[in-house]
Image (cartoon, rainbow, N blue to C red; front, side, top):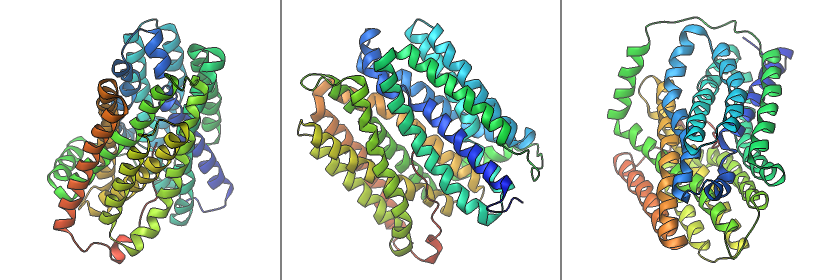
Length: 407
């Protein structure tokens, strides 16, 4: 096992953090470009969301299959396949000239991203000593968050300067360089033992998790929560580039700096969980998001930024607690349970975009407030249902919170 603060440890953490940064950069860089694509392709705002949602939907359905595949061929090979595929997929996006070609390309990108995202943590668990892993996972999660923020800001800024096709090409070149660095740095696996015949085992585990209300309700909370907070940013992008604000794509993309507030709240959730009921924390996070929706009713840029800060604080707080709840309350096959949580999470984010953009097109921000409130109501109902079944869960058994920031 690789010990903390050794040369091999530093190679592992640098390479996996870089890979994490790259996959989330590639996943999210199209999000701030949607208003421009909506205009240039002459499609509605809701329809344009397919370009973003195709990748997250494909990612969600491919997480578990890639994880199963890695049990036979190894984690490192799967991660490298995903990383080296991404720049070629990015180049294909530039060559396609139709809306449907973009959707197809983004879906394939989601499949490639899932290859890395599904097994990176498993690689660390197997190769690193427990002390080294506890340090490495924090760096890896921080890279997730920074990759998502950087991808969105780069996508918006480069599009404003050079056009969206050149932005895609530049990010593809960045990904090639990063993938080569990961290939050179990431050590070969020494602790991995191939296993076969796990397909039916994982299927049975998935069914058991869905039958366990204590686990499944938390997965649904994650889905509704991500449907709200990631897609409020998409709607806000359309709002800022439209009259009366008329911001450029580059300036509008700076709203994603508000995501940093979520990184702060996700770390605070560990302290909350050691002293209080995590279900109360999920409820608190939902109410913070609700107040954020209300503040954005005022059509000023400071109010919108404050809104996004609050929604990021509440959304990441709820997500971290729900994710941890799933891993702690799954009776068996905990890795499958957390992968299934991410499936719900990304499907919620994909479908939530269509829902909130439809609300935006129908009734402007008032419609988004109504739609967002409906999603918050779902989170509250599920949280209270869990609370009714398990009123006393915040004891020492709940103190081991895995700090997870959103992507």
